[in-house]
Length: 179
Image 1 (spheres, rainbow, N blue to C red):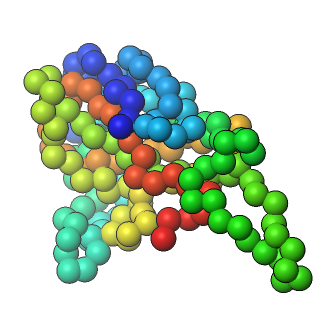
Image 2 (image 1 turned 90 degrees about the vertical axis):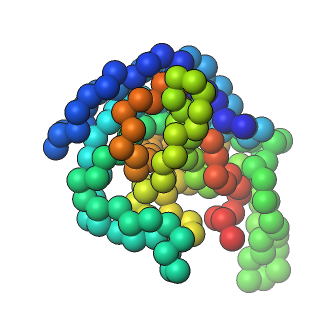
Image 3 (image 1 turned 180 degrees about the horizontal axis):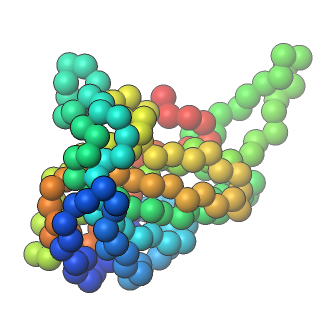
């Protein structure tokens, strides 16, 4: 389960070449799900998809996104609070070529996304088209050392302008990249 970020209505705005502000202060900051990844901040806007057109992975399981298509855009800042006493999931023992085990680290690979909701609490259908889009491990991600912060941008393809609140969730967090 993620952190619900906004409970106030984001103003309806028209799409233009420049994202329109829909910035809201998070209603609840905290750890994402059962992880030690801390949500520091999140702001949102409506705007066009600013990247080249892309299609989902074969056989077309994800829809195409065209440059200029409407998006709900979320900037999130997260922090890795994993430590050597509390390691991230998927820790594996790695070995040097001489057979000596590599000391574990509290670094984490983090892949966040978001779920958006209308004022009735219904999920608004949206596709995460954050580059690199169309790959099994695409989307917003960061590789963070213990205590390190990262600011990431999540692009959700949707023509809805009635987003009431959103939730940041982790698609993956682990000590190694996703399989």
